Length: 390
Image (tube, rainbow, N blue to C red; front, side, top):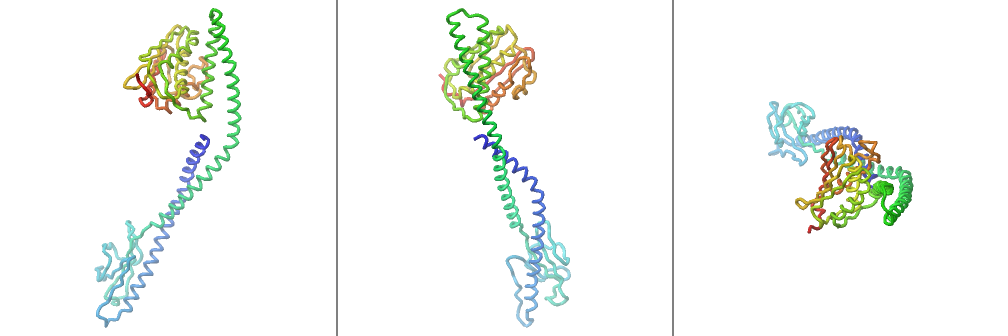
């Protein structure tokens, strides 16, 4: 589904770019069509002027009066040598009297014809007038533009989808390989965790087993990130209601062994034990796990991490505060594969996943970090995701 959306998106972009390129010749075509329209109007007025002249020539001086010809599509009038109207149907004032065809800035067209002396009621000039309308030109240009846009869009969509098929097959093969690999990785990880738990129940815990368990949890967190990256392109994560306080406590407990490897104490403070939210659990877990994992990774040994959950104005606040190395480039940490300190390990995808989730859900994130002193991540979950407060 998203492949189609991408193809449609880039087809639209390509259509816009090609259309911009085509606008230049289309503009010149428009100017050409306007000039053609102006010439056609001049010919039209000349043809109609012959009708007026013929009517005056056929007039018999013995008749009582001369009925001046009137037309709906143009106006005309007779003027003397001093440019005064002898008889005129033209309501607008004429600015000049020169033989020929003239067009004003407001699209008023005039055809001025010099008449023989003392022949047509003492008139010196016959003036033909009408207002040019470019409506047909605009309609034709618009029709051409729309036809070109539709044609380009259809062709772009067709070619993009056609060219994308080999890449889709490669991506599908690669995705299947990654899925199978992820499954194969998860199985031994689960076996290791289960056997460590069984062993520690029967025997006293020791630092070597603790390290092994902490390492498997780090690997599990990386696995969960990779699994989310694979799924989020194809799966619509359904929201469900759950109690966030117990969920947060569960996630903090999960990272206790990882934190103990650096002798870091995790301090959890819950303002309420009955706060229900309506968000997909996998997405909120990625936010909590990646933030907590990073806090542990960049904290100093023998320090602490404070985690708080509280409510203000019916909004849920989750705070993570560490006392570690801090962040120098806050805006860069959300870039995929960016790692501020490469000695700490990792792939640089955790916070990129967090950013994509909070942007999708509209969760606000406030970061306060001081290099060499620590960092504070505050997530504000909007009121609309609050399912139930008790």
